[in-house]
Length: 263
View (cartoon, rainbow, N blue to C red):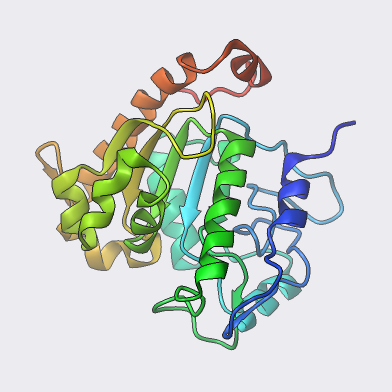
């Protein structure tokens, strides 16, 4: 039996050295957890085989995993709490937008853990050029491995980070905040990433689910505002992602003939 693709990603995720304030993830949380704290697969569970890796599914890209203390609590529990705001709000909006959770790979832009208990603010390694380069190169590795038909970013920091990796997203990095993203366009189709041949995808920028209720009123899209605007973004991005599947080489489509997003 072939090895699950996420196992190779987990072995490759760590840089040669972490910057001050960032520590390594000692071991993967076995249950449902964002990568690299866990395997990033929905309903993974200790004592049974990992769910199938969703090649050509959905990549859900957060900023960073969590703090050292938060990771320890999740490891002891065996999974992240799906009742905490990030997971609770993500599950709610994905369910209403018909994004299948089992077709998602939940991962992060920055690898490692924040040392201590702090979970918000600028990531400690964001000013370390070597570390940032590693995280960007590893994101390309993740994209190349999964070849997602739909990429969903969470929060205002990730769109800036990936704007350096795709000419089609360069204007995402020309300003800050949700209003800027809504002005230049939060849903993009036909997006290519530097270093990946024969791959195009659809990308949509969402508010971070942990901040959703505080920031949702800022969203505007296609004449809708707030919650309806984000639902419209997701539904439009999901529909446009069908075209990205059709544009892939035949061998890429054949790999996932049985794992296509329902529309």
